[in-house]
Length: 130
Length: 416
Image (cartoon, rainbow over all chains, first blue to last red):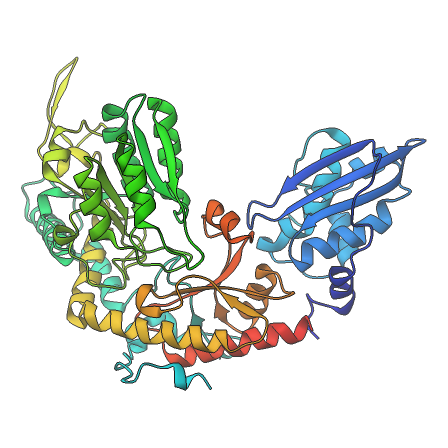
């Protein structure tokens, strides 16, 4: 079996969790991957300082879509401040697969758009052996 | 299976792999299947040898020294210019070396457009342009207050001469800037006809020939374009050298693009005078080794014969279109008839993102590009964000296409 395209990655790609629209929402943002023109948006409902609910939307490769889907399951219920502070290591460990340098942005796009929604600024998450 | 789609008389297939050292490299015990020549071509041994020989035996700055080495370097550099110009049917004195095609286009956008265009004028580009032939015109249009308009690409990946006529009839078009061959669709545009119609309407024409010169016979004089830009690294030569052919009467009237050493005749405290063409546009020390390397690449191509290179790539493109077209779930873009296109095939695979296709192909040592190919307006028109692109050089063989098709099947299995 391919080490990058493991079954759970393909499963999240084909059946992404928490994708769609979330109305009403408190926070949202939209980001592009400059490498390929892929785009990913997020809408977040906040309650008691926590992410009460979240939906991603957009399109992209298996890595970026699976990463968003896998992250969404962890992000819902998380403190907003905690989510804003997540670094690249968190995402890469969650994925548990070897990501080449050129595919890093695919894996990190979902975290970037979440940070953008919360902080108003969409910087690439750092860490993960960079 | 696709042999039925081959031309009745299959052209002789070139076998040049032994001339290209990198193609003997194996990764993970498997040979390299290089199908990304539209990004950059591989380099034959004699190009590497020519550059090595220059640095080992003749290295000196050009246009300055009177000693033997300097004269040798001068002769190698200007000799290469003569042969590079002759390769595309241009004159050496109107053949300018730039860093790449992007810089060549920017030279025209700064030196010609900004001094000749004004409010009420229009620049006409097309939906199939590489960003390098779009962004300079967006900037020039904004700087001069002129309009930027687009010729559309139809479903078959071609431009409409009727729309060109309609745009020209508006009377404000001063420049038509377009690709000779599309880097995504492969479409070979009817550039001679476009130049004729543009000139009749009083507009100049700039052709981005980055994808044309590497793979087909080109005669700049016959095409008649006012500016014609191409690049060394896609033409079996090194990176760092682009070529701009311009009409001498235009270049002579244009101000310098970059100022500095080697482009001046006399420098005063307040003002200076410029050297004659082509050196007026070559400020600073030139890319000497790279020009010499490109000279060797051109020699190699002239010996092969560009007609044979074109025939070879036509055969490969026909074969690739048929083979990829026979796969369920694979869609190709651009003109259906390989005779209307260059050696590049863009495609998408149902249910597999282009990045994932390229990643899985890369694991099989099949090197392709997956991206928007620096042509985002075209991607939007095609209704995709990116495609997979396989592109050919004279060193590719049918078995490379077979490896591509096999790897695409493998990618489909992973995502099945």
